[in-house]
Length: 137
Length: 405
Image 1: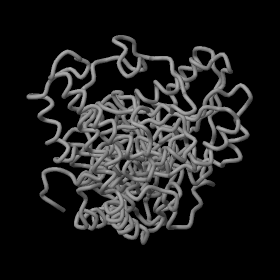
Image 2: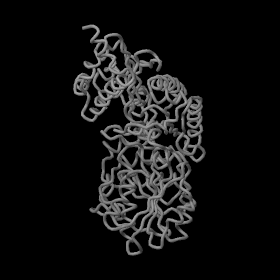
Image 3: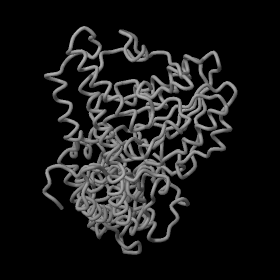
Image 4: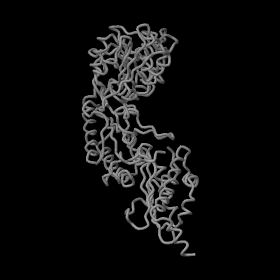
């Protein structure tokens, strides 16, 4: 399998590997995929005041592309609002990492992981983010 | 961890380097002694024919049969094709049923599929979780219309040794022809065709330090086994396999098998020690599973699954080692090893398996390096694995509702 240098770099030096404590304030978790399919991604975001993602961590069971895709999105979501993060498309991930066609599903999974983490945040904290925004306006 | 420019070769079951002693013997037969062994009218042909016959005798000596029972082919794949299709078609009037095992090499399985396509019926036996086939189940699969059974001696992925002596007795008693794919067995386990009730046996040179592109098929003479040729032409090899004999390849196979006969006992002891060193090195880790029976197994094979680590990232993590993975992740749909699936391993464990095969040039330092690397990389991948984290938290992964995609 010929991977791009970016994939290999993320695989060999993954960014933001790890977990936040589940009860930590502002933390939400998205877990997508299935072991039988060969990939499971866990993406955690830590949302601060103003609805901005302050930090992100991941753990991934999967191929090099899956690890690279999730490592990349932890870098991308940091500093974004939830709405901005929700706007990240799998095509951007695939393009950045130069994923081969058979590995596009890894980028789709990474996009799903962001969406799942955001949904978890909204479920846990309601529309807290909007409330914060309104307060700032 | 290292500045080696090439990974350490631990994939001797994929292929072996040609032993330099073998290569040296082959070269003159390409340049000086280039005659066609079928040329009967001059010395060029005579000397080539003599070299071919000497090599034939060496192959026969390793497996204790008559040299007249050895037919040259291009390799074990062709031998399997010739044996299975050749015998099934020749004896089709007797019946149209064949028996084989789900863990056979594709060269056997696809050949049997081809027979099904042209009107034969096939039974594919399930092995036990150990990888071995239960003799009672084997016997029960043989029917009055069974013409042929085919079982490999040594499995290429997990290295288990099937009880072919027992299967041979059963086949002989029931009047069923018995073919054995021994591609992975020569030089690893003793083979005695004088006592085995085997009718057809496939061999390959390049798994035993000979060249690629040459193999042989043993075809029993007493009681005589007949085959329908798959390759037609000049009537070489008693009409069973036409085509000009590749003298240099044949000489190489003969020399490789001669060395195997002389050295296998001492060589296998050394290799078994290295394999056990590797096994001991990985057994201390958590959630490591050996695939296939450890007792009925060739000395050079170790196949292990590392739970909670995905197969392809595992191979990427092992790039300093040339090993085989049970996972074929080259397509969009992941295909776990069909051999490990047949043993009842779940997809995850089948995906996370690695086959280490040790050989003539493996050193203790290679094994120690491999063990250190495995510990480091598996540790790193597990730190990154959400499944490992859940396992460590005591969550039963089988109870989790996964969002399948």
